[in-house]
Length: 303
Image (tube, rainbow, N blue to C red; front, side, top):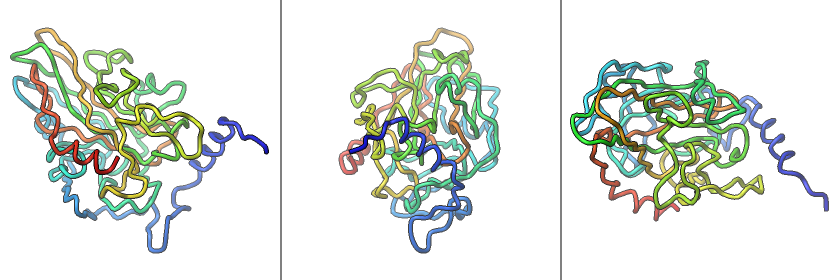
C-alpha cells in the first residue's frame, strides 16, 4: 500500500481550491456559488439580515452598559456588513451585526453548496496577516472605533465565527481568520481567542485551523473540537459549512479613551466566504454578558 503524505494532500486541496467556484455544484438545480441569489432565501431559522454601510449604525448595535463610542469607521465592500434579527435558533442570540469576507446573504440557508463565494476584490489586512503568517489575507471587512468606559475595568464583546472553508480545507493555507484588536495592531493585541470550557487549547486566534473537528481528507487532529458546530450536512439553516460556538473576547482596561478594531478576512485567496456574528449589546464595560440560554440546546442538538 502506498502512503500519501499530509503535505501531498494539502497540495491537492490547494489545487482544488484554485478551481473557479463556478465549476462545482452539489446537485441538480443548484446555482453556481458566484451567481448565488442576493435576495434573502431564509428558512426555519427566521434570521433577517439588513445590509448597511453605516459604521455608526453597526457600533450602536453593539453598545452595552457603561460604554460610549466615537469615530466609527467601516472599511468593507458594500455587501459585507449588516445587522440582523431572528438569529436565536442559529447562533443562540436574536440580534447583532455581521461582517463578511463576501456577501452577508451567504448566511441564508439551506446549505446546498460547499463553496459559496463572493470575491469582493478588497485588500487584506496587515494586522490579520500576523495571525496567519506566512500566508496573507484578502477581502477584509473592518470596523474600527474609539470607546470609553464610564464604569468597570473590563471590556467584553461576544461573537460567533463561521466559514465555508470547513471542513474540507481545515489544515490548509485557506485559514480564514477573525480578530478584535484592542489598543494596537500587534498579534498580542488581539483579544478574540479560544477560551472557555469548550476549548482544549486556549489562547489561539479565531481561525479555521484553530477551531474545528478535523478534515476528512487529512490526518490532522481536531483543534478545539468542543467549540465547533459542524454544518457540512446542512443540519442548520445556513449556507456556512461550520460555525464556532459563542466566544467572549474580554480584556482588562484602564481609564480613558481606547481603540477597537474588529476584522475578518479570507486567507490565501478571496473565495469561500466567512462571516462573524457579533451580539447586540455585548460591547460592555465591566459586565460579562450572559451566555445565551438557547445555545446549549443548539449545540447539544447538532454536535
